[in-house]
Length: 168
View (cartoon, one colour):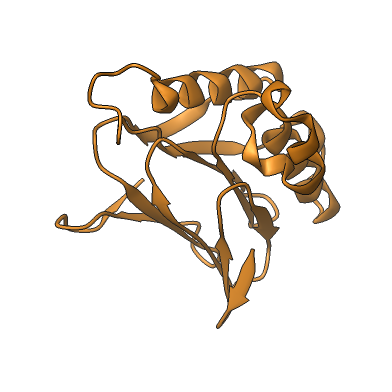
């Protein structure tokens, strides 16, 4: 993750959270990856994790350096981080609003691996274990997405080449 002009840019496997009204969270090029955006309205805190794969069992070593890379380790890590920013019961998901983006079918025209779909299902399974579910999602399709979260408003903007920006 790198910070640029009050924009925290998340790469694959990165996660971040903020409650600073002058910051934004942004991740680029979500193909089969899924951005899990968690908002805590009471504290005006938002967090995002850029999940690349469903389960950490495929690479336990990578979990140490990039827990956000996997759905099963990234979401708990993000919730723990949000708890440190004052989200009451953050680790249990209470008072949270969840939105998802990504999970597309790209570079897999024959639908052999279904990574995007598997990522979305794995993310939802982890969220459900916390008593959470997405209230909005923009997943699937065959195009990549860039996601920006504005901390001051909680507005989530999606963009994709050749398309007009839209909100989640």
